[in-house]
Image (cartoon, rainbow, N blue to C red; front, side, top):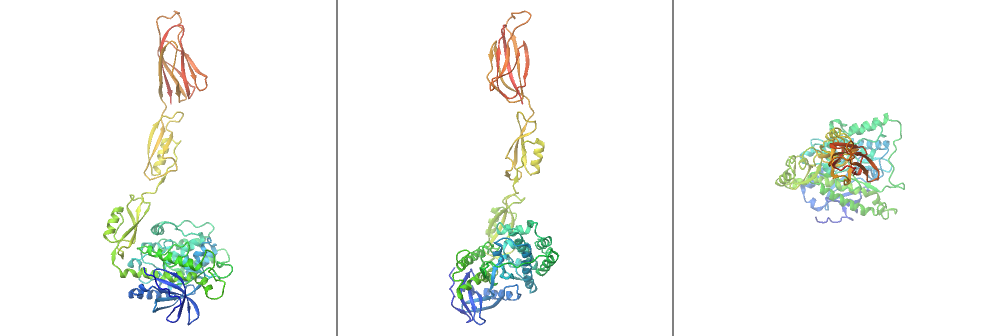
Amino acid sequence: MPTAPDLAGRALDGRYELRDLLGEGSFGRVYRGVDRRLGREVAVKVIKPWWAEDSAWVERFEREARLLARVSDPGVVQIYDIGHAEEGPYYVAELVEGESLAERLQRGPLPAEQARTVAEGICSALASAHRQGVVHCDVKPANVLLTPLGAVKVGDFGVARLAEGTSQAVSATVAGTPRYMSPEQARGRATTAATDVYSAGVVLYEMLTGEPPFAHGSAVELGLSHLQDPPPPLPAEVPARLREVTERALAKDPGDRYPDAAAMAQALRASRARAPRAAASPIPPADAGGRSAAAHASAAGPGDTAVQGEPPTVNLLGAASTVAMLDRSAARAGRRARGPAGAPPAGARRAGGPARRWRIGLLAGLIVAAGAACALLLLGGAVARTTVPELRGLPRGGVEARARRLRVQPAFSTRYSETAPGVAIAQLPNPGARVSDGATVQVVLSAGPPPVRVPGVVGQQSASAESLLANAGLRYRATAVAAPGSTPELVTRQSPEAAVSVPRGSTIALSVAETPSWRTLTTFSGVDDGRSVPFRILGRRWRVTYSMAYQGTCLLLVVCNGPSAEARNLQTGSAAGGFELGEGESETHTFNSGPGLYRLVVAGGRDSARWSMTVEDYY
C-alpha cells in the first residue's frame, strides 16, 4: 500500500491547522490540530488519498459522520465538523482530557459504588443515542472516557447503526469487539438498543471483577461463549441489587434485558437508592500531579484505537485481519507519541505546543477508528461478492472443498461437542450472507466430547468400580488375576491411572483379585534322604501332598520306622514345621506359616522307603 503524505503544517479549508501526527490506520491519519476560527484544540482525521478517489465510499463516509453528529449529549464525545478539503475528506472531533476506563481497569477492579456510578454514566450517554435512533454497537472500556473530575463520556460511535430497519445480517457485517459482543451480534442479526445494554452489562461485570465474563479464546470461541455459556458468578461482596442489574443486562435473549440504556440507567439509580448509603466517589485521575496520561476524541472507528490490554474491534466476516493491522499501526503511533512506558512526552512540562500531546494522546485512536468501520461497511460494494455456503455438518475436507467452490476462505478452530470429531458444528457468518470474494469464514470443528477425568477405583469391589466408570462415560475391561493377600473381587490395578484425562468412551483396564485356589509350585521324589529345590510361598497357607511306600519288609514287624520331612524358611533360617511320612497315597500336611522362601528336607528312617511330594500354594 502506498504511503500517505504527511499533512502536518497545512490548514484544511484554511481553518483547521494540522500540527502533529498522532496516529494512523488503514483509512486515515489523525492529527493534533487547532480550529483557527474558534481558537480551540481539536483532533482532525484526514482520509487517505486512494480512499478519497472512491466517490461511493466518500458518500457513505460523510453519511456515517452525519449520523454520529446527531447524538448531542454531555456524556457523548462530540463531532464538530465534517468537510472535503483539497487534501481529502476529513472530520473534526472533541478533545477530552482524562483516561479511558480500559486504562483504569489495568489497575484492578473498581469498588462497587464507583462501578455503579460509571455504569450509570455510560447508560445515560447511551440513552441519548437511543432516543436519536442510534445504537453504538461497540460499547467497551476503551470507548469510555473518565475525566479527572470523575465525569463519564462515551466515544467511538464508529460502528454505530441507525436503529430503524438496519440489520447487520443484511449487510453481512458482524461488527464489534468479541469480549463485549452481544449474542445477536455474534449471530450477525439485527442490533437494537438492547444490544448496547448487553455490552454495558459486560463492562459493568468487568468493573466489578477486573475481567469480562468471557475473556479468552478466538473471536469465534468468544462469540459462542456469549451465545451459549452463562457468565461466571460475581464476587460475593457485590451488593445484591447491583448483581441483579448486571445479570439482567447479560441475559442471552434481548427480550429478557432492559429494553434500552435509559431503563438500565433507571435500574442502576434505583439500586443505589435501595442499597445501604455509601458515597459514590468519582474515579480519581490517573496522575495525582495534574493531567492524566491520555486524551480522547470520539471520531474513531474500529481498528484505529490501540489501548493496551484491550482487544480490537473486529469484523468476523473477513475484516479481522484488517482491523488487527489498524490496531498495530495505531499502537505504534501511540507509543511514539508517549515515549518510554510510564514517562510523559518530552517537553510536557513546558508551556505551549509539545505539552498538548499529553492531552490529545488517545484522541488519535478514536478518530482513526471511525473511518475504519465505515470502510469495512462500504468496501464490499466495490468488490465481487459471493454467498456464504452452509458448512455445518461437513468434515474438514468437505468444508475446504465447498468453501473453495464458493470463493471463501475457511479459518478453523475447534470446540468440544457431542458431534463426531472433525465435523463442522458452527460458522460465522451464517449461510446465505453476502461477502466479498475471498472473505474469511470462521468454522468451528468438533473436537469430540470433552475429555473425562478417570476416577480412582483401585481398592474397590469390582461391581462398584464398574458402575463408577460407566457413570463417568467410560468403558471397562476386567481381568481376573492372582492377588495373594487380597480380598476376592477387589480391584488391584487400573490402567490408565486415576486423574488422567481420556476421551469419553475410552476403555479402562481393571485387574480384579480372583478367588484363591491351590496352585502347584514344585514336585520332587527320592529314596530315604532328600531335599527340594527352594520355592516361594505367596499365600497365607500352603500344603505338601505326598505318597510313600517301604522297600521290602520293615525291620520291626510291629512298627515301621520311615522317613520324616521338615520345612525350613531360608530367609530366617528357622524351622516352619514338619511331619512323619506314612505309607500310602495322597497323604497331606498343611502349613500356615505364610509367605516366604522355603525348602523341604526329608530324612530317612531305619526302614528304606521311596516317596514323592508335591508343594501347593493357596492364593
